[in-house]
Length: 630
Ligand SMILES: NC(=O)c1ccc[n+]([C@@H]2O[C@H](COP(=O)([O-])OP(=O)(O)OC[C@H]3O[C@@H](n4cnc5c(N)ncnc54)[C@H](O)[C@@H]3O)[C@@H](O)[C@H]2O)c1
Ligand SMILES: O=C(O)C[C@H](O)C(=O)O
Ligand SMILES: [Mg+2]
Image 1 (cartoon, protein in one colour):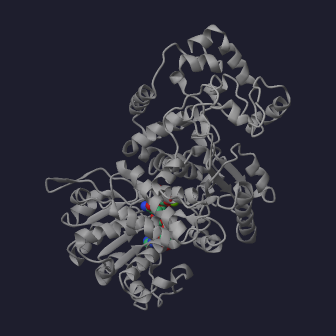
Image 2 (cartoon, rainbow, N blue to C red):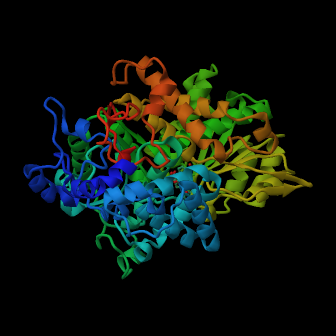
Image 3 (cartoon, protein in one colour):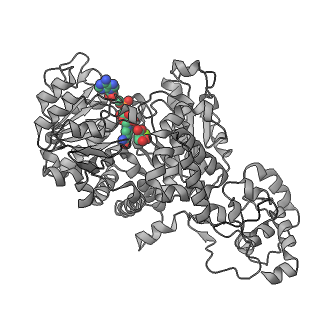
């Protein structure tokens, strides 16, 4: 370096960066880039070598001015830029003199967040960090999952969605409105990243258990995709959050002066269906046929039927139906080790008969069939109770179409407590959005039904949970096996402390997504969710069970996600669904190759040496590697 400094190469490099450009220039710099591409470059490209090869450890395939290295969150390292980088990139003097390591920066982040008492402020701090320094944000999240998952994700993300009009500052993701019908592909083209592999999208109609939040639902795909990166290491530039704004039927929002979405009633019927059709087509047209399309928080009237419509035509899944089913079945499998009852020996009662309940029930049936029951025998063990009472074929209005498989020819019952006493379930599963619906009487009845009752209060966020962890223990003499969708503090019962688990689809969808992306799988069959459930259940240790947890700790989520990805990837090839060839010999290595590097990369151009450092893998199947996209 010192030789270079003496020879004045740094000023050379700074101007080099200003002029750097390439054909894949994107976003606001596109016009400038195309002009510069035509102008003479300072880099002389040896014959038969392409531009990226010659530029070596290129900063970004974009036109990047010095200051952009600080303004672009994907490039910014703040005080962690070294002296050489500061000089080479033309940002020397734009930063304070101190050089910091990423570890030192992480300490400051932790201290800063801890200063906030209010979770929404913590959320805002993290949003701001992601907007400022992406690698620091993801490393902070990935290394402190237990602490920050409840902030960027459930339950705080629910509050953020409710206040979205107030906290909305910078766009993250795309808003595509019903008025864009006929032009969706063009809107997708405005997204500055060309290498998108996964899209999480919502129409905002059933945001957690909070109902129709319209365009305010954007917090959900953003939060889900943060976990794609933090838990599964899927690269952030490959992830795209989208809100499909088709209006809202939430009158409060329509009258809310802060509301940022379309101020009109929801589009329904043909218009809505055509819009979703066009959206699905546009996504694959823009990003390729294996683009993973994750449906999130769609209302019951659309969730199941859209899954049915698209599941064999696109690489798609519905997280609320299938991801939730997988995590719940994993919990049931782990619980078998405590209850000593096989899955097929339980009686299941669901409170709520919507997307989540039907997803869980169907996968539980599949797991019981794997234990030897017929499908009909398995279905007979599953009861559901919705807003109109027990799903009885004899009730007025009968059983809704989407839950037909679980309707029973028995006396109708509208009193849930009476139902728990009559049916005597051993597993009670709440997906109703009704906070506190598992009353002390219901829980006490569960303790009478069986020695070790399984009680899942899966509704989110915390205020919608059917009961708290403490209430479940208090009302079952501490004999229950409990899990909840949102986290609860440790339970104290009879002088012992229990740490109950979070039955949340966050244990599943990041791993499924990584496995699917890494194999370019074109369809996601139901059996993949059973495989994911088995992999997750396998991770539950005796220590977990001893403290009341039927899931591994959140701290293990990254390892769990990678292992789910590996199993999903193997299955993809076994079933002829993977389309990336040759088939990997070592799946673990293969999966790792797709993963993000949370630590900073050097931003020094490698032009001093030729050929460039052998450590740099310029081209891989994941696309061109450069510091901002590793
Ligand atoms: N833990 C997780 O990973 C996870 C995953 C998905 C969904 N959820 C949560 O589960 C809840 C339900 O989600 P969904 O997608 O199934 O919603 P949904 O709208 O599809 O279903 C809700 C169901 O609850 C029923 N219901 C409403 N009020 C009721 C009442 N008073 N008594 C009995 N039933 C009642 C409705 O009739 C409907 O059948 C939400 O709170 C959601 O956040 C959690
Ligand atoms: O978002 C979550 O925390 C889980 C689930 O997808 C939900 O809709 O509640
Ligand atoms: Mg959801």
